[in-house]
Image: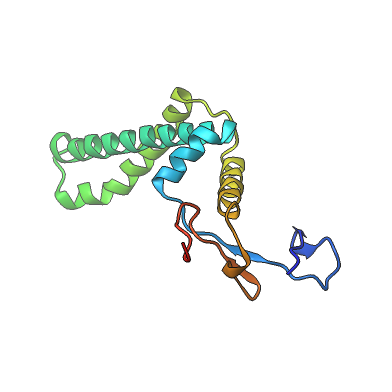
Length: 152
């Protein structure tokens, strides 16, 4: 099996070569923490984005709680009106929380780029211990990098 490099879905080498499709196992939270430590600027950005999302979630919860309190107690509306207002309060909280999170924790890299580099890092981790027994046809079903070999 020869592995060809794809550029926008077209092999750079001749068309007669096979393309190996990788089926990677999911990353665990421990793997994500390792990426944050070992991933350079992209690992830092993942940690920063996690903090930004935590701020956004907290502000969203706070605005939903405050908005519901305002709707029920200050405006003296019914529970149905308060329930119907929830999406508005949640949207307002998410937008405001995202703004506050980005202001509190400025980004150091693009999030799309960070996602791509996290996938590349994970593919390298999985490829460190690969062998031909994991290849079935045109698919490489990668084993989890920290799994023990089957015949060990």
